[in-house]
Amino acid sequence: MKYKILSKANPLDRSAAPKYYASPVYAGEIELKRIAEEIAALSSLSTGDVYNTLINFVESLPKYLKDGYKLRLGDFGIFKVSFGSAGAEDPQKVSASQIKNRKILYMPGKDIRNSLNDMHFEQESSLKTSV
Image 1: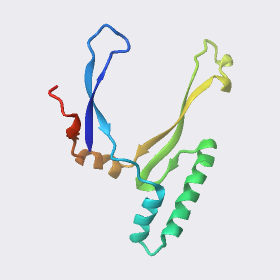
Image 2: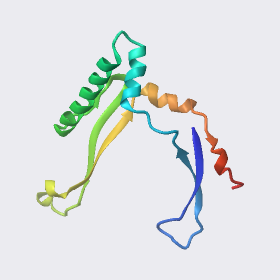
Image 3: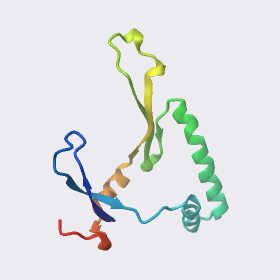
Image 4: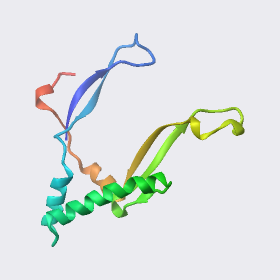
């Protein structure tokens, strides 16, 4: 995977010198149709069958998440909802209206998580710097 180097200021101390960080450079996006084509090539199903199954799968996920389930998708990993809330001095004053920052979290399965250990990184050639 390629990366570029970005300069970022310290948000807590604007007078501090900026630091430099590696940031991912994405090769693009892979659409669901292409994934369906690749899965179809590995199976006895047509691209349309796989694509339709994936679309139906994606459409069913929000229902389970809204109902409070963690979605364990085998070796792929787990999806779950997370959120924050405003604090209160009294537990009786905590209510659903204080819930904010709703997010869907993904925790990859062991094999996917371990595959990241084998990644090779290289600086994008057009952005090479002497830093």
